[in-house]
Figure 1 (cartoon, helix red, strand yellow):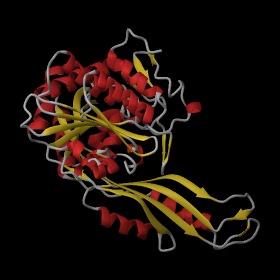
Figure 2 (cartoon, one colour; figure 1 turned 90 degrees about the vertical axis):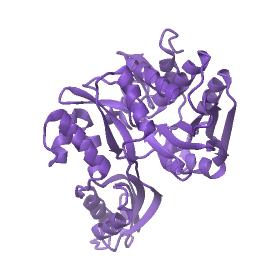
Figure 3 (cartoon, one colour; figure 1 turned 60 degrees about the vertical axis):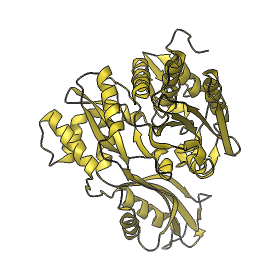
Length: 431
């Protein structure tokens, strides 16, 4: 049982972690139904009408609309995803699905990505409604399935088949933004205003099957290994965008260092360095290999999965370059392809997010950045909804927060969750 003395936002996040919503991809998932019902029950307890959409058995999405004071203003979507990437328990120092609190931290798969934000959304709205208040404008609270598989069985189907859920909405906020980093001993917040494009590809090599003892010059595994190594070792060139240029200017202002060496400047951000550097260039990371069925049999076919994240607007050029790198003998199959996005760091919502952080952590700068990964904001973009990353967390300088995404021993400070709930409630009351 969750310790009732803990803040509500921590209890909710802990409860959500205990629902094993592991998503292995390709339709192989535990399912989000129980977690969605938990969220729906909580929202109903606040007096909200809840709708569920389960287009595929157990892949459950849930939505509730919160009426605002000024319904002439466009609605704001506040969304999260209920699935998590798998966790191998033997690699962790705690049970990844126990949702325990120790050393001032909430531990478990989803503590960072993104059951923490789900709990912050739920309790921020509860703060407003329990006080007998309303948000400034209508809020569409949406909790999606399948984000960790590119949303193909979650948000993509929701926007296609339940677009009425988002009627009147023009903007959205979700994960992977609004958190603090420490730059040369100074705190700053990163606000996510863009995402790289997602292209998941499969490399397929074919050769001649045969006995493992033979001299063999047409080995599919050898061909695949060479292609995988070539892609994995490719250092893609720097390609800055307006957002990454603004990020570098912000880091330069904090450190006094010049902007002409982006990688060196990102190094001043400590543990966040790798996260920021990935936004400066395309990345191609091998993530899975499949080949063979017996030690002494050379297989006819070998496959590999590559996670490709592309600077927005360069997708076709990158696909052509991928083929050149691996060679014509390797077939490239596109498994998932989704858009990249970039939004100016300005406007009323951006100003409101910056001001909300400023009221709770005065004098700390907020810097825009381009997310090297992706969120369900991509699906909402098909409805003309502009998305941002704003899951506000004030974090300790020595915590490798960005390294927790999909990592081992995922955890988040209890006090950071409380901070995030307050900032989010502040934003929703005032924007």
